[in-house]
Length: 187
Ligand SMILES: [Zn+2]
Image: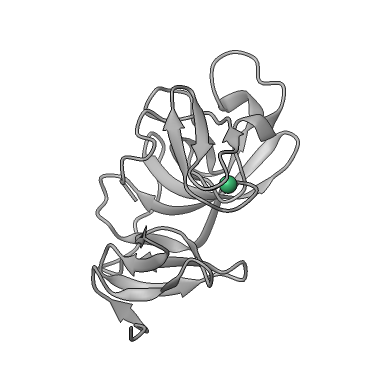
């Protein structure tokens, strides 16, 4: 199969899951990764492959907006999120490396003892903007939280089963602060 470069259209072959970890705007079918949107291919240092929709001017997240982003770092009290998209502002990507944080107190209502039990590295999350200047987000709400996650052991797709996630490949079970939209293919 011929690999696509630069701008791709939905269905364009991007590579295999051995080469890349599927990110946003892509889908994995039997170990082959394809574009699910029209846009530009982006490959991170960590070999995560995304297709970033490219149309118009980048939207700016505002207070109350719902955003989609990827967990890039997990610290004791905060998760660092790279915002990719603002809901309701088209499929356009936001300005490059728009980083926001989710403080442990804004993950969900109730006490959270360990941030690492709520989010995983490279998870995709849906979150609401609490403060647009400081870019602080919240995932408190049924529709907010993790919408896509990969297995911490084998990088396989995690499927939602009840309130937990189970790896398709190695059967590892993981927990997250899940959005009710988990696995619905919004990304
Ligand atoms: Zn696994």
